[in-house]
Image (cartoon, rainbow, N blue to C red; front, side, top):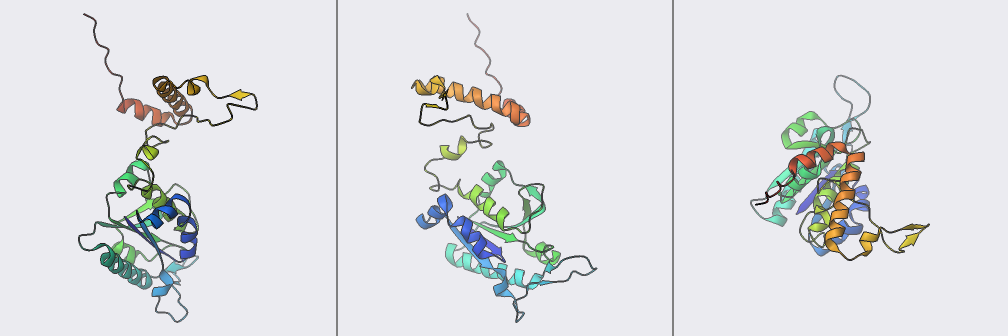
Length: 246
């Protein structure tokens, strides 16, 4: 899968995505992540990409031409790398967009190519958004100084579900939110720390009992912290009817 990020701060994006699991996944060839400086596509001699908004108002607005030209170049590069029939989606990271969820991140793994557009200043000229953007996505109901951090979050969230990025699918399927519940508490050595022992069942080696304990703890934790998730989980996992005795 290929991710192309259009930004005014490519070094900021690279600093995050070239590290840890996502960085190793790039080196191993499971995913491709490229960051493109929109300023490189400015026709202004000073490489300006912004101007004052029509109608007045505070702040500056990113202009349409460099964004459009950057997008066209990114599409051409990706087509050359991926070949024909590319399933592509262009996403603008914006607080006006639909909120990113685990389920929707899973849907995005179906694409071959995601282009992520990062705004800055007061945003981007609406005309280019209307022309090149397929949808807007938000990472939450708050405002940041730019779209770079949300773009990194989206890449991380989607990329970790691509085959090979994590050792097995269970690595992401059984985690908080992904499985429908918050994750159960976990422990490692030493067996006793600050006079608090690891729960005995986890040291028993009895996998059925361990699985039952983990599910019970996950349900308890979700009920306290996210009762909405527990209600949705219970609706999707109704108890099995008991067999009648003959």
